[in-house]
Length: 151
Image 1 (cartoon, one colour):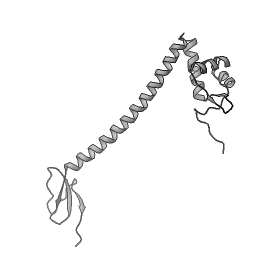
Image 2 (cartoon, one colour):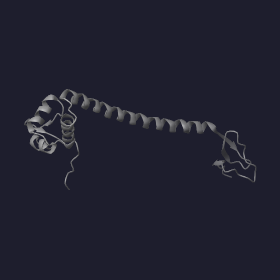
Image 3 (cartoon, one colour):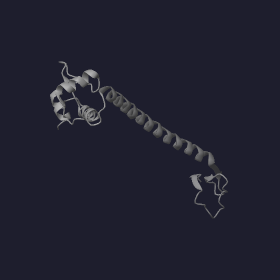
């Protein structure tokens, strides 16, 4: 079985990353020195880039050449994009937590609305608040038998 690579696995040398990003290797090294796209390092000190790094290099290239943004502006844009991504993750986490809490609250409110009663036959039933226990021959659809005494 061949191991699969993730988008964040640093496997590409600086020359391959530069070729894939469509720029010169010296430009990639300069971006690393400036902290725009920081490479992972091998034990020997060689730079290694991931597919995510290469996408970021391509974005920098686009911002610089097509949009005319200087490197300080690009640095700020990348920093803000990382903050936005972090805030989106936090927002998703908080929304999921809010949904779970709504479910707990709904369950608690539903439990508070239930009333337990004993029917004429001795069965314990649960009713919605304000609902009357069914008479001997009838059983309402909302009434639920939760315990039946052993005879």
